[in-house]
Length: 432
Image (cartoon, rainbow, N blue to C red; front, side, top):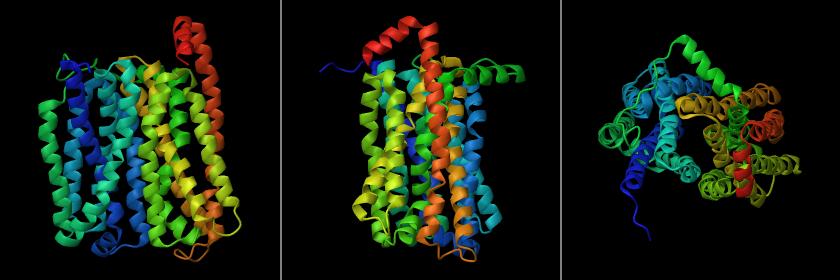
């Protein structure tokens, strides 16, 4: 076995520290999921007010993607990630001591701002530190292992809330950020040759040009619609509506619903390496793989929603596996962005692409709530299976839009490559 070079070891260390920071960001993002009941008691709020935390956090995260991408191109990953980590730590500290709903809401908004800065920086570091043939693997592993943050937020945070209480539990979570802040300052560098790399100063004209050039290439748009179409089903189920759908819509026990959501996370983590291997070996067929995965998700949802009565548990397991694969499939969108954008506008491209899936998830989260209220008037707790079938069927609107756009920009990307880069076209086709 060939010993890793110093640069390879450095790349792994930078990625590992960055991954720990991303895990913490996902932990902070997900920590409220196990504190819902405690939050309703502490702030004396309704279920609707509680759901506002999630929707507002998603909205802020999505809205921040393009600004963060531009800032990343200007100031580099190290400084932007540092800012994001400090912001997250301050936000969780504020959330720990908040005693009113208004202050808590402000804290969650700040969590969304800090969270938005972490993932795009880590992807930029992966693109900078690793050789091209290893980038798809580490991009996928970043997304897959990041899901551990949600798992870590479940059991340990539940225990901390029970044993330590609200303030101490969230202060302890915030303190982890201080430790990782030190690790970031010591180990993370923007590139093998620079600790902190800066891009050119950005005027309004430069910003417009950077965004326009990124958006103009059909590869960026293919990445955006890939992210949009593959991610929203898994995100919506895992973040808010999965548990109510299984319990109210499919009449499962709380234990069965929890098991299905666990299967969803396992499917996300298991599929990542396999997808990374495929897109590395067969780059020409990345969009074909995306279309196949989305089609499988649509088919499984169609079978479940069309099933007379409650769907059998084994069928719901298959649904969770199919939906779970969509999570790492969304990362293929970033591989499109990497392939068709130069280094100096990589942040803008990643920001454009990353907002796709979260925007779709936000639309779906809101739409499901509106449709449930429409189909079950006068009740916020007794949603019926029929109401859930109507609500979950809204996904077909998003799938329809996304699939049309993926096909459209897949055709444009292939035509662009064949016209402008015939040699690259030949090499890509030879790889598969």
